[in-house]
Image (cartoon, rainbow, N blue to C red; front, side, top):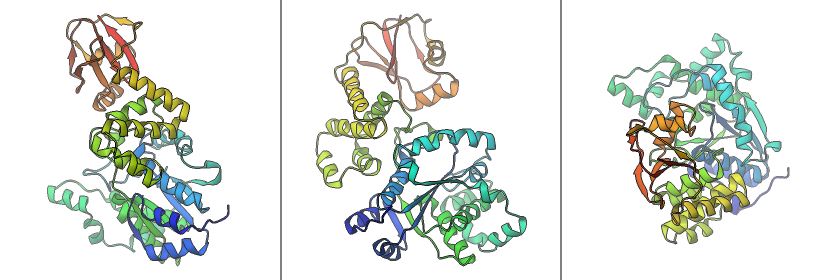
Length: 396
């Protein structure tokens, strides 16, 4: 693909969703020179779903792809088992390789919702990391000091608390850094919490007589449906594989102060268009936002249907007349009810849906009677509606 030199697009690439560029002057000069660059993004398959927060990095890859550069999507099947604690306040457990393999089964399908997957290089870091000898690992480790690692903000907090820090955690930046050596990356994309790890790539590339990669650190980190950082471990995500109605509903349930942030970092609408949209009343702006996000992942027709369904069910408070009726006992546990009516397949799924705020009790006119906030909540018998996403049953 021919390299496109468009200074306006390059400036937006270097600023939209970007917190820091290392080295910005050098990278811009290379982008304006017409040189084809190798752009690296690594994703560890620690959960089966990619979500809007993780999609911010995919959008940045798309920006580079649109300018004609070589895109390398690195699936961390080796690093995923070891675990990165850069954004964690406690030690991340090692994952079973089979679980990691299972988690990444649909990653290409999910990434293809944003990227032209036929025109990118997809690799797994087990191809080189699993073959490193102790001698080679020693060479990598010698490039860093323990003090450098201990100066990281979350590591310092854990030290102050007296929390355990495993030697394994020291190895993760070496592995991520060596990925850049193996791929001879020109640019690496990561979140702000990944700064130490991506800088390790520069250090190790110098060690191996390669030109050090430039770095794009993205941020701010997107908040999820509950206002905390969007994270699969907290169950507050808007997943790329969510059904259209569920995705639309989750966006509509997000906080008003996130509208502009979701527009900027979760879509590629022109920034001037976004400025106009966010001047609307929050409900109208959020309807536009939910439509645009759902359209990206499900197409315009499905997004229109999801919008109509949401307006029918929530704005007009309409409840279908032909709902299935389910008889429950007095003060039945919500977990028991959800499993009985096959709305969830496991306690884990029930807990996640409840934490996302997806489980609600409505009256027959669609007005909310009770928002379920815990798997220990109970619901009383009597004519009302139990709703999870687009699923509804009448409780009697």
